[in-house]
Image 1 (cartoon, rainbow, N blue to C red):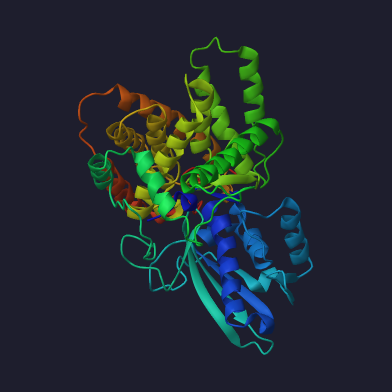
Image 2 (image 1 turned 180 degrees about the vertical axis):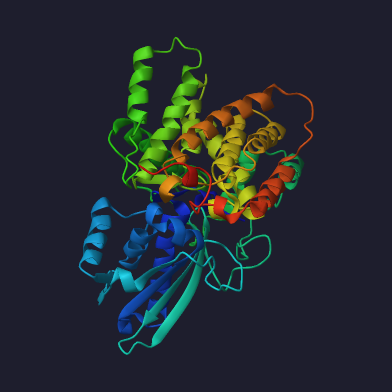
Amino acid sequence: MTSLFELFKIGIGPSSSHTVGPMRAAASFLSGLSRSGLLPTTTRVQIDLYGSLALTGIGHGTDTAILQGLNGYAPDSITPQQQQDALDRAAKNSLNLAGERSIPFAREHDLLFHRDQMYPDADRPTHPNGMRFIAFDSNGATLATETYYSIGGGFIVTAEHFSNSESAVPPTSRRVPYAFRSAAELLTIAQQHSLTIAELVLQNEVAMLGDPAIPRPRLDTTPQNPRVQVIAGLLALADVMFDSIERGIATEGILPGGLNVRRRACRLAARLRDLGSADPLAPLDWVTVFAMAVNEENAAGGRVVTAPTNGAAGVIPAIARYYRDHIANADTAGLVRYFLTAAAVGILYKENASISGAEVGCQGEVGVACSMAAGGLVAAMGGTNAQVEHAAEIAMEHNLGMTCDPIGGLVQIPCIERNAMGAVKAVNSTRMAMHETDEHKVSLDQVIRTMYQTGLDMQSRYKETSLAGLALNVIEC
């Protein structure tokens, strides 16, 4: 079972698969060198990038993320000063390997973008976000090599664990009281035990509290009560999400990367404040502002929460703020239900399909986030488990086939607006599901399978390569 704390992770922009994942892969490689006693004799490290990482890695900050990871920094704790320190060191052709050992580093020889090769092993199709790390000694002999795949949402797997089956997730020995593998099974188990989906997920998370592999936000004090501990961690993530909204609304200027895209959330928020609430659709305008604010922060390399990815990080926070600010009788308990239920929906996509734009297009990022937010909002507003499933299904059904075609390889156009549209769709999906009384024809399990099959059928140039779609037909300026 995937934990909600793996689905919702604190990281830096602009991309969970191209920034957070590669930074974590670099740290994992160094950890392996250290465990095997090879770090002291390592004098050179070479990184080879393939597929989508090679094609859009520069725009997504893959190169800088790997440099920061090799210098010993982690995506959930790195500071702006540490980010700059790593870049300054690289500019002087040096790395402080794991923060312990200074070695020479030359980008042109040691960080290679193989734009003409989709996979690390050309004859073995795996995942299009592949990277290989190689450590050498002073004689040029290979000390260690490891291939990683960044499979979306900051998740990484090694080539050893990668499988040609439908899921790239390595097997786990986690035991939870209510394991589920499909939406149908989730609904059945919840009904059998008279649980809401949120309560079911909460009890699973309590069972996983002792797992050191699950990243959890740092708390000032750790509550003794396990349920309170899980909820405190969840609300800490919510605070990071809300902070990213506030920073995005407060900040003006041009986003980095060369497209000269101007931040708009600040101006849109000011205009909404001037207009007041006379317009009955003003809450939806705020949803747009909230989502765009987060993704402008993400595009600028700021701190966000993968939800389930960085490229789709604006949808979940936007709907959380919509619930908190615009729904009557909203409370903290409702917010907790929102995040727990959204996580259940996200886990279904993660374990049965994909949340990687490079694998299935943006339907696997913004589409999944929209589906998660719709189901979560139903729970927050007191809806039934069946309505949660219905809302999540509606949301994905109308994101099917969405390509991932960022202009210039930057998570800006159409990604920022696409988050706003996904958030608005989530609200509408919730309303449709909660106003419906009859059974619906298409199940969430069916739409998850359809999304995955559609992604596999989609030509690779429409999946985070910037070789087609808007990326091809809009002139970069």
